[in-house]
Image (cartoon, rainbow, N blue to C red; front, side):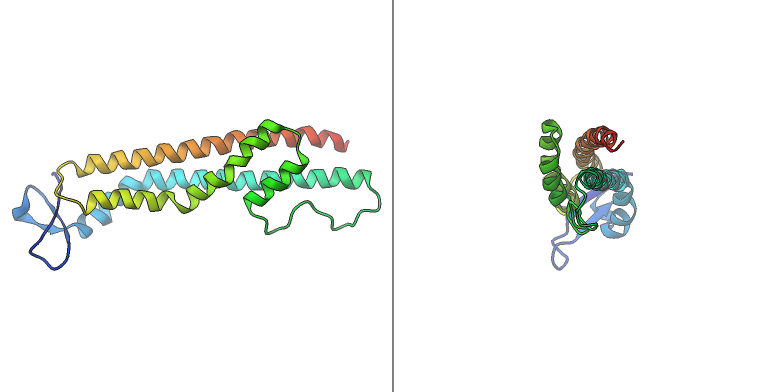
Length: 189
């Protein structure tokens, strides 16, 4: 069964309709398409976004762990230091944590890679769905289109690939950060 999309000028405003085989059998699109087809098409995208956001959260926690170890090293060498001394605040954002990390880490490659992370995370958290909705709305509310399913699938796949690339960059930084953390842990012994 093909789904056709079109504006129906005879109805008030712009209304999207879906037809099984042609305009003579119109039924409202939101009931058929938006409740059943679109959620299935975006399920993988939602999973990828969730996994990527989780990676960014792991990265944030790994930075906090690194900074905590640095504090232990400092306290080991400076006896009269305040017991509550810390290199970060509990409510510091990822970007703030990275700027603080840059001041105490000598791995320039990792620092440079981490510098790009806040922008990517913010793009993922705040813009990926908005951009997807704009693209999919153009497809759903545009002129009649027999290939709506294929075009929507292509749009979803493009967004999934974009999210995977963001997650890949965050994973590489996470692995580098874990390596740096292991290296400085040896200074505690």
